[in-house]
Image 1 (cartoon, rainbow, N blue to C red):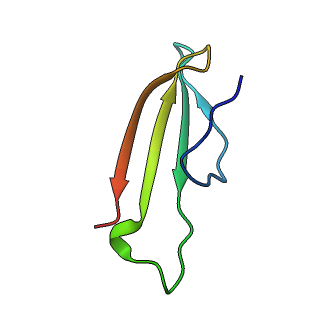
Image 2: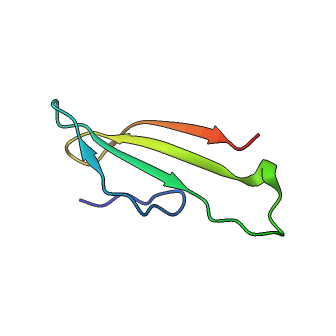
Length: 60
């Protein structure tokens, strides 16, 4: 199973009691990055690797 994340993640996935896989991501950004371009995500995947839902969190 594989899933292309929208950005970097340095966390371990978590598996819920129902088999749902949760992954958190974030963007690395530097001094030249516009704050409105920065997003983090929480992604839920079904046990077969298909996408269950995605929640985007904007920086501002």
